Length: 181
Image (tube, rainbow, N blue to C red):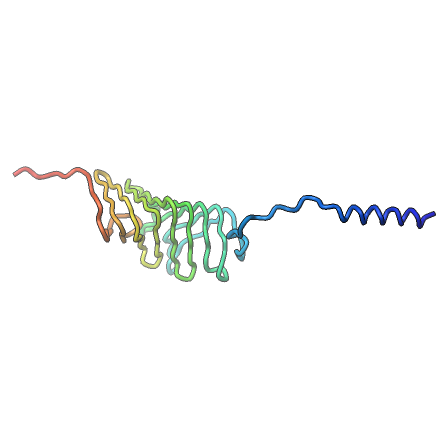
């Protein structure tokens, strides 16, 4: 009697295995997370040059590539320090890339630098080179300083936006005081 019961159970199992269920969801295309060596969340690291802290880097998500030397970042925020160590500016962007070997941070999408003394730089793309303590871009930008707004294409300067070179100026507006004669 046991053998007919086993045969019936095997037949039911075989029929159940041939019925098609719903397939698991599959992404329409590959994502960056598919090829990353690691995926990190709530990232925080120090930006240093020869042991001196030049800033801090924060990101919601980091995708690690190239044997832990390249990081593709999402929702980026970085702080910049003066040579005295005092925090003096904040960079934010939608996306970023950090190259550990070159010590270069790039921001992409709605990049904004705001300094403690009220300067504000906006651009679609920006590069920060730690060793030179320099920010630069070869695309459009707007720099707002107290009493003046500058715009153009391409610039190079320090992260505090106190010294900079405009590669191709576009427009400027602000107040100009002419001394009495």
